[in-house]
Image 1: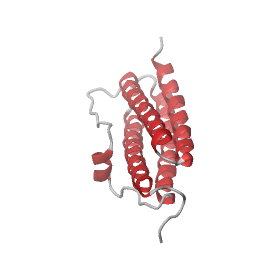
Image 2: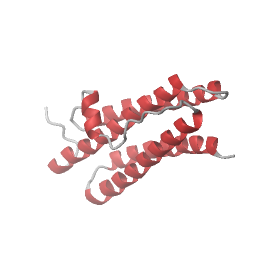
Image 3: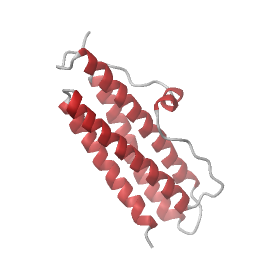
Length: 158
């Protein structure tokens, strides 16, 4: 059955395509955050272990809500990790040391990159599309990433 929610034919395809890219970014960031949670080492292990756990739990909620937003527009979420890797603009990182500063800097850069991408999408959707629900939805996701980035950035200050 066709989804009739007031989007043009173009919007009903372009918006879920962009949301799929955002979903891929969130999924890659979540896995990178879990990696930091699992593999952190050093004197500040427990504190950072809890920080990374808090953040990957937030990302898991975002991932679910983005996939559900894609479905509510009438499309399917990307079904595989391979699909996510083809859509994301983030990179997988391998490191020699599993120290907190290295993990935090990498996760901070990824969060900031996602924030910039979300701002672009919000601007594009507000100028070109008629989906105010998605604009509001993305604004909420952006605010979550701004707070996550703030927490990470605060750990890097001396």
